[in-house]
Amino acid sequence: MAIVLLVARILLGLGLAAHGAQKLFGWFGGYGLKGTGGFFEGLGFRPGVFFAIAAGLGEFVGGTLVALGLGGPVGPALAIVVMLVAILTVHIGHGFFVTKNGVELPLTYISGMLLLLFAGFGPYAIDAAIGLQAWPESTSWIALAAAVLAAIANTAVRRPAPKATTAS
Image (cartoon, rainbow, N blue to C red; front, side, top):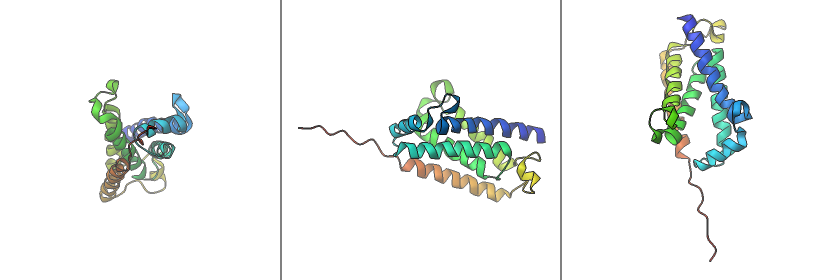
């Protein structure tokens, strides 16, 4: 089980961190802050660059913490926030499969993060090395509730694009 948790943490964490690096730095074929910010503006997140930074940091920092096995429930909770917002604002109307821009990929990340949030990072984690190997289940539930509330709040602040006025 220890090896399985290690492999899951590394794959999920680095995959998510790479998504964040696409947004923040334009790495791995990403659009960087300017391009991602423009996309976010189109979704109603204004200012777009601010929300691109928030999403990019949530993915990059959350994924890195998960890959390292550091910070207890913080990394999985950050990942869950970003993935829930992605589902609610981008993917929900496109069905299930990723080939149609559906919810498949963010749901997969959420599933893996839920597993790590409640099972812990295992013995091959930085948390274990510094004596924080397990956290109480109540902490996991609090982190999950905070992530869901943060995702709902994030989607609630979306604003439609200002309507263009025509000169008469």
